[in-house]
Amino acid sequence: MVLSGEIKTPPLSKQARTDAGVLLRRLQRGEVLPMPHSRPMPVIGPRCHELRIPDPAGSQTWRILYRTEPREILVVEIFSKKTQLTPRQVIDTCIRRLREWDGG
Image (cartoon, rainbow, N blue to C red; front, top):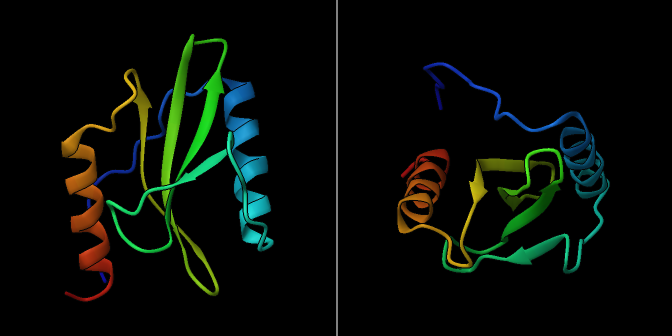
């Protein structure tokens, strides 16, 4: 798969960025993160989860949507969540990206 376009870093605070890095490192080591750090997102697909990153500096909570693979963690989307429901547009974007990644 060829990636194109510009990659923009979300405006996480330094603390939120550090917390996200720690949690992603734990995932890379094969740890299964329970609530409140991560929750399954079967609506997106198998092995898909939502990582929760509180950002006290910005008074918001960031979400990192990812899929676990045998040798990697695929980060599919990062966004600031303001309601309990994940926006349908975010879900659809994740499904499309994973379908493209899987070659379909």
